[in-house]
Length: 252
View 1 (cartoon, rainbow, N blue to C red):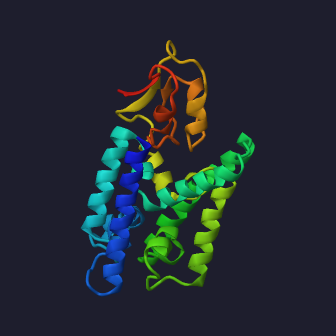
View 2: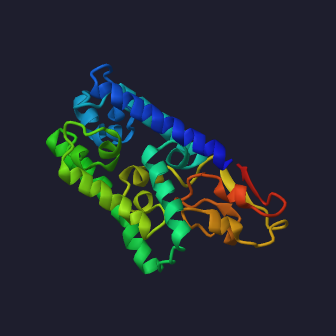
C-alpha cells in the first residue's frame, strides 16, 4: 500500500513540475498555481462578492477544490497524504529525520498551541486577501516557492520561509502539515463525520502498537475503535503495519 501511495505522490509532483517547466518556457499557461485548490479558498469571499476570479485563480481551481472536498467528505484528508506535493516532501523529510533519531513526544500543552497556528494563518490569509483583492500570500507560500520554479513573486524571503516551514519537520512529525498548513486547517472543517473511516477490531487486536508507531500524525490508534480524529489523512500506514489478523479495516 505504501508503494502505491508513493507512486500517486510521485505522479502529482511530476505533473506539477512538468507544467511549471512549460510555463517558465512560455509553452503553457498552466503552472503550479493552476492546480492549487487553496487559491479557491483564499478568494472565495471575493468571488462571492464580485462574481469574478481575481488574479491567477480561475474556475479550474474551484473545480479542484470541489473535488478535494468530496474526497475529504468520503475519505477524510486523503488529499494531504496521496496528492499534495508539499505533503509528500514533508513526509520524505519526516522519514529521513526518523532514521537518525526518534522523535521525542511533546506534551499536549505544547502541541495544542502549535496546532492552532494553521487556523490563525487561514483566517489571516482569507481576510487580507479579501481586503487587498490580491493573492498577497503567494510570495510567502511554501508550495508556490517549492514548485513555482522561482515564479514572478518569489524573492529571497520566500525561500527563507520555505526553509523554516520545512524545518518544523525536524522537531515534529509532518511539522508543516500539522502546524502551519492553512489548507489542512480548512479541510479539517470537513474531516470529522466522513463516510469512510478506519476501524480497529478489538477482538483480534493484540495491542502490539505497530499502528501507533506507523502513524505520521501520531494518533493513538491502539486506544480507539473508530479513528475519527481530524489529523487522520487516510495514508493507510497503520493498516500496512498492522501485525495481527487484519485488525484495522476501512468501513462506514
